[in-house]
Length: 227
Image (tube, rainbow, N blue to C red):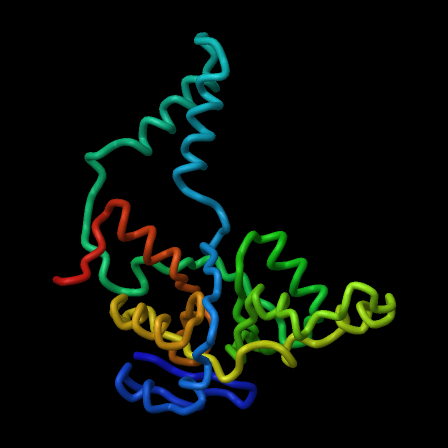
């Protein structure tokens, strides 16, 4: 099930087929590709390699801390852990909520995206309800940035601009029990790098990105696309 949220609240709720008939959502389609970012901005394989390198960088000893590190790494390679097909948003979404308040400035938004290592964040009101989506690409649009020779006051004014003036709104969202294939279809239709995951009340409870789906395609447990 998909919904569309804007400044005034929920504007639509229905199936993928019905969502495609919503003009506001269709207008989200871009003429350029948005560079997607993972939910935490880190590569899982590189992170594991870092752990492995850290273990190898110390000579073998009887130190308890080193044994714990080796045991922890071994557990990540344990193929006997339970496997189950992944088919819904709930299976893949990030439950670590990285969001922006609708009162945030462009400077504050840029700081959050940079510190958290993400490429996008849902924008919420004081009650945590979804009102929009801000992406790093929106912040870096050439037509929005002042020229290099602009005065400092021009750049300062941009940094103090409210995120609601540049965010995507209305923005599609998805329920946690939705089929991953349908989410992928919406991402292709709109060009968005991901969708906020909301509950029945419109509260943001997670986020699912293109990288989340791609990561599931190439890792275990298996992504159930044709089940």
